[in-house]
Image 1 (cartoon, rainbow, N blue to C red):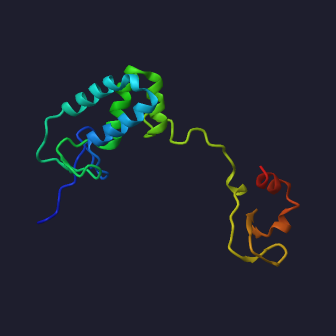
Image 2 (image 1 turned 90 degrees about the vertical axis):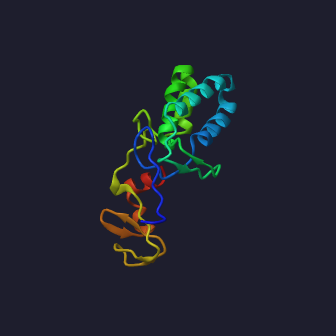
Image 3 (image 1 turned 90 degrees about the horizontal axis):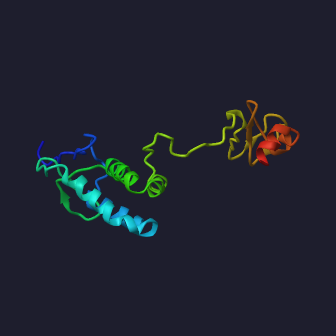
Length: 170
């Protein structure tokens, strides 16, 4: 097909790259982040970046247009893989800063989940609001209905429900 560009492929994970930011722009972001967090390790991280981008010879058949700097690069590494590699290098340099990177650039490299421990609540205690309607218990019109025990009820009918009041008020 004429005029159709190839989708760039990450050199590390060999997956299509749909969010094209070149390794140099990603490194600039990491560098700005390091200026605030740990400027004393910038030289080591710079060496890790140079080593990473120098690992692969430039492939002329695999290129991407960086949405940040507007340059075409032949060293295609997806943001996930790039930050994962910098994270692993950073762990060797300074583990505390690596953990901060993990929190600030959360790609879940440690497979802990993105949000940590979320409080568990049963599904039936969730509030479902309807814009307006008729309460199925008292048949009165209401601006706000809640789904409770399989019925849509107004707040007046739910005030006597202890479980509902505990859920609503914390």
